[in-house]
Amino acid sequence: CNPAILHLAGTGLEGLKGAAWLRFVHAEDRVRVERQWERFIADPVGVYDAEWRGVTARGEHRIRVRAAAIRDDGRVVGVAGATLRLDF
Image (cartoon, rainbow, N blue to C red; front, top):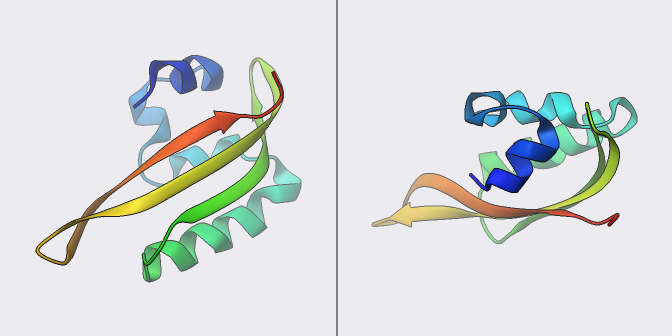
């Protein structure tokens, strides 16, 4: 995990594992983002690409996440991606 996103979120790696990262999604965006993520995880073809407002101890930020499945012999073994802060 990128140390910059851990710093921005104010958490360690455990705070972003699994679906724990959804707690940093703004309440008004959370249902939409969670549905998009669930659709991607259910059928991880192509690239997950979403923008949302993130809320951390450091304030509110515009975030864009792009991710793709990591495969081994066709089997999904993980997800790799990038999280960008859009409001510098």
